[in-house]
Amino acid sequence: MSVLNKAKNYVENLFKDKLSSVYFYHNFIHTAQAVTKAEEIMNHSEISEADREKVLLALWFHDVGFTGCNAEGHEQKGVEIMTEFLLHENASREYIEEISKLILATEKYHQPENFLEEIMKDADFSHFASPFYNDSAEALRKEWELTGGMCFSNDEWNVMNVDFLKNKHKYFTDYAKESWEPLKMKNVKKLEKKLDKEEKPKKENSDSKKDKEQKSDRSVDTLFRVTLNNHTRLSDIADSKANILLSVNAIIISVCLSVLVPKLDTPKNAHLIIPTFFLLISSVLTIIFAILSTKPNVTKTTFTNQDIADRKVNLLFFGNFHQMKFDDYLHSMHDLIKDKDYIYDSMVKDLYFLGKVLDRKYKLLSITYKIFMAGIISSVLAFAYAFISL
Image 1 (cartoon, one colour):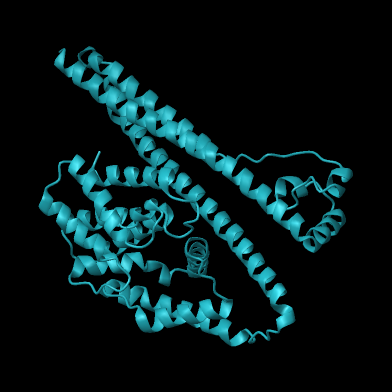
Image 2: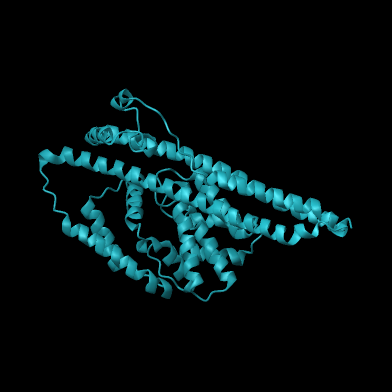
């Protein structure tokens, strides 16, 4: 396994085991997206394979310092974790020092000193040009509220974001300037439109309690939106991994059927029968489990009108409401909309069952990878033994 794959698995497990749930933004999803965006930049730039590896390693570790539950100085903490990992991989001190400089280059106001640092900065702030920028910004806002107690009104948050994007941030690489800067400015314009449309709040002493309740509601809404978004992205990642395994093993099977199998009917190739059998069986099993992990699992329940009246039915899940008549569904949804607690209970049910689906997906995906790895290893050993025993 390459050092990059080892780093990815190490960081993913580290975030899973040690990262606090309050980090809605600085988590494995953000890290994986930064790596993907760095690859996008490097695919449109002239860069050596050695430098490419350094950048990707640095990005995998650039936010692992948040596992220490302290955002302050997380870059230096990330350097320490990366150093321990690479020493275990027998990397040289000089190589580790180069990766360390790249990680430290992701500090908010650091000015990059070379092309590799420019890639690091642009990849780390690539979400500024994303069509989902607002979701990322809200995730960061919620994270700051929970970790530092920093609360902002909508106007304050939008003004701060517009100021940072327009006056304090810039992309450095030619590719990011050309491809991402226009998209970033579109997001800026959207924020400015929000500021133009929002009326200045008229606050009175008698309304202070109401304002606090509205802030609390907004925080809960953000919590649900960000968590549901993270669940959806994790599901997409699992499906993507399963599709990769499907494609790879489909190719292996077609090559075996077209190249190896036709030659097995001759006595001189009899020694290849068992290794080929191992390879085909492992590929077929991998495909079966990959399909199972991506197979939709829709639970359908039966319920009575009394269950609806008692609010025991999740009206947000199509597996339930598709059985209802439109008039009944419309009436029930009106009841749902009027009751804030009923809405939150329904969303909690959605989150819970989405989590159960994700758990099933990743368990099957883990089995799939183990089958694939065991099949490849046993096939290679079987082929080696077959040739040695000739």
